[in-house]
Every structure is written in structure tokens, then in C-alpha cells.
Image: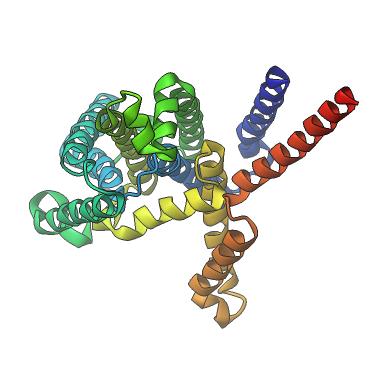
Length: 332
């Protein structure tokens, strides 16, 4: 039964991936291409946040600092040095190193605290990076930001679309293997009952730090792609709004489901795009944030576990009823 279910799920994933690969050739729209590229980027960011919230039960309000580190690292490299593929790879490696070290450091300082204290302290760390980016104007140019060149292979929007799509797929596969590994099972046990997991002999703090490091590195990759997509970076990448976007995407799609993070990213980006476009039709849609809030409230009311989480619950409920009926017939 599990094999059939896994094969069916894999088939669906392959069909969706095939559709996304063919999309630029079927529907030649620059606007839609850019929109899907943004969805792929924020899907990576939302999946990185889901490792903390959905699989480990950690709420972070400072996840934007890893996103911002990735954006500024690639931006500074491309601005100060030549926009070559070698420097781009070096920027990626440095981002992974910085985010790993910082997430480990922040984890050691804060993960021993209760969840709400951890959330507040991570927000404080993100605030420190925001202030640093605003004050260190010789490098960051403050809130004005700066533009930069990109390597030749990243200039074409279609090529960049496929790069972002490929990166999202790779991150999804890696994080799926990570969450399904024995280490991932321990993280889920920590989420369900931290005290019981610790009583079984697991070092809770070590597993939380590992989750924090993996999450921070993936968020850094999303920040790199985001900066490359705009070819511009400023202090907005460190703001609370970025973290809240990841939180909303995770909740709307389904906490603890990596697919849900991708679905949530798609819903929020599409809603933002369509509501903004409707502002040209009537002035009331200029207050698109109100309608966006209504959409979020409706999703939470009717899909309390997120879209993917609720659908899974319904499917498992039906499967449980079928198994119960089969057992009852066998008993009879």
C-alpha cells in the first residue's frame, strides 16, 4: 500500500515538474515567467522555514537575516568584483559558510530558551543585521541599495527560470530525504514532545542546531536567487516582512509538508500579482492588502492545517474508515 501511494505521489510530482519545464515554450509571457521565477525562489525560502516550524516546532521571527546574507553576499561580489561565473560560485560558497556559522552561533545562544524567547531573540538578531546594512553604507549603500551586473548565463530570463526551477527541485528532494531520515524523525519527535524525546537519550539542542543550520543555508540560497532576479539589493531583504512571508506561505500551504510550502508560495505570489493588477480596474483594489488578509483568514478558517495538510487529513480519514470496514468484515 505504501509503495503504491509513493509511486502515485512521485507520478504527480513528475507531471507537475514536466508541466513547469514546458511552460515557457507553451505560454510565452515575460510577466508570467518572472512570476513563476519568484514563486520558485520563495518556495525554497518557505521550505527552509518549514524545517524549523513544521518539522522541529521552532518559531523564528529572524529568518530574514539568512535570506539577506545571501542577497548581500552575491550583490557585493558582483558589484565589487567582476560578474563572472567563478565569482558567482564563490558567493554561493561564502553564503553557505556564513549562514551555517551564523545559524549555529544563534542556535547555541538561543535554542536552550523557550520557544517565545527564541522567537524574540531571533527577531533582535535580524534587527541587528538590518541596522548594520543601513549604517555600513560604503558596502551596502544603506536603504538606497545598489544595482549590480550578473554573469552571462544568468542574464536570459528563460535560462534563469530553469535555474530557479532546477534549484527548487533539488532543494525539495534534499529536504525530503532529510526529513525522512532518522535525523528528521527525531526532529519530528522533538516537535511532538520535546521532554519525552530527551528522556529517550537524544540531545535536543544538537538536533535543533542541525535543523537551524540546514534551514539557514537553504534560506541563504533563496536570498541569492532573489537578488539575482532583481539585480538589485537593499535593506528590505532584512525586514520582518520577508520572514512573515515565509510564515504565511508555510501556514497556508500546510505546516510540516514541504509540498505545502511550495503551494503556499504559489498562492501568495499569485494573489499578490492578481490583486495588484486589479488596482488598474478599480481604485478599491489599491488596498490589495485588505483583500489579501481576507484570503488568508478564509484559508485558515476552512483549511486549519493548510491546504495540503487538510487534504492529507481528509485522505487519511477516508483510508482509516476503509481499513476499519475491512477489519469489521474480516471479523464478521
